[in-house]
Image 1: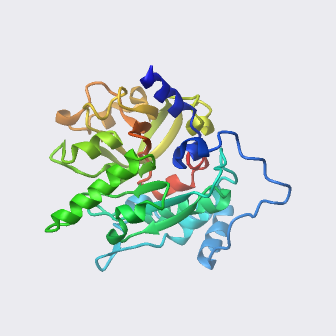
Image 2: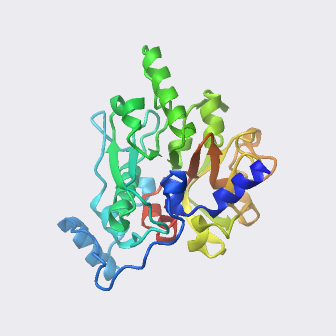
Length: 340
């Protein structure tokens, strides 16, 4: 019965209430409709973005394809500023109200330190989370590219932690076993103590090696670890596994075609429907056989169950995974943004 109640509670959670954890302090009723003329419209954007918007209006502009973008690194330092055309596209797609209104101010930390592949979509992902909070008034956002800020004391001020494409052993520092252990403990305690954890795309491509998870507590908490990916821009049909959830309401229960780098996960006790409440997944029956054959036989799932988004409880906290987001254009998709 306890497990059933947990699933029901997670299914009933709105996007905002999932992110803005806090039990009874989060209102479940929809936010009041905005007043007439209260819509602030997009924030001012730089001339390059304005030029993009003008060209897009007349169908004369084609942004660089995500497959042409390299890693978000310049002279050994992560790039933190999103491209102007990505900013403009995201601003066009932002929702104007949150599905639920928190009873008190909420704070989100977007942590964007990548120690594996540094995705070019990291800056626009962080920007999107920040702008949704500003546009809807649902939360305020701090964006960090600094490992020194990942301490128990600093995390305590936040309600939600977003792991923005945090590849590799992103909390570990070679030669600093004590610091590594402290950061790992801080993350587990943060979630289990009642806060929220969100992972976007390559946030799940962490703490694994040779097809095996290397931090079992973390791997189980987030719902598995990366195994393989179809290269961008792979076309897949996404099926909505829980059409009754507010997190999938924008899709109206209908299949959804998307182009992105599509992850697969370990087939184990972490990535299965007993451990996860799945929101949407790959409709494997609609995938071309040639694409299916690209997946290595020794890592292919025997159940054909390729999950893309899920929620689960961890202690007193909650975890939300959205595995899309390698391609920048994912963050200008209105339906996907409404899930946040």
